[in-house]
Amino acid sequence: MIAFLLNQILSATYLMDQKIRLEDRQEVFAYFGTCSRAILSMFELTLGNWPVIARVLQDKVHEAYFIFSIAHKVTIGFAVIGVINGVFMQETFKVAGSDDKIMMRQRERERKLHTKKMKVLFEHADESGDGILDIEEFRQVMENPSVRTWLAAQDLHMNSPEASDQLFRLLDDGDAALTAQELVEGVARLKGPAKSMDLAVFSLEFRRVGQMGGFQTETFPRSGRWGSLL
Image (cartoon, rainbow, N blue to C red):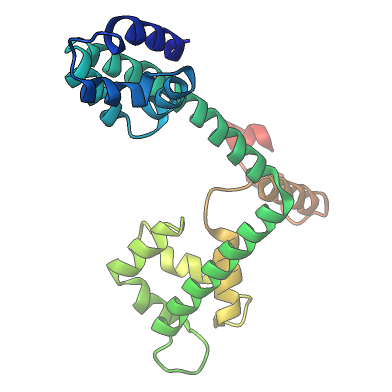
């Protein structure tokens, strides 16, 4: 509609005016002389190299056309087209996020990246080169502030000096030594917030041990939060 309007206005008031130089009228005609030219120019003004057409209207026709060019670009070119692009991008990412193959590839990339990072940490900590980490080697590497910061970036926070011993016990399978595989799998299991399934499994095991007589509930105080739960 804007293209048709500009075509009619310019044809009646500018292109037919014999007082204006022929070269200027030919230049304006190249953009707005016919309906097809005007439509193509409006698409270019909206999506393409808009300053060229805006300069032609301002310099050749009238200075006031800069208001039209800027207003059209701000409202249609930036706001409307930006919203449409945002909707399309949102829908595209939504579809991509629900695609099984894409999710599998993403998980596989995350797993490989995590494995690579943990193996780099293991090689840095294994000073003896025997392929295992004892508690002393683990403590020594965890004393490095850069390593703690790096682990925090992996969603594994070491907030106290005792946290390294606790982490070692959580990763260890009971032989007082960590292998690269134990480090990779253990950190992958521990990093990040607690999952609902993990809490449900812990609650189930807790109740099972209680039913088997693994502990006496009378040893816990009956007052307070834990007493009410027991």
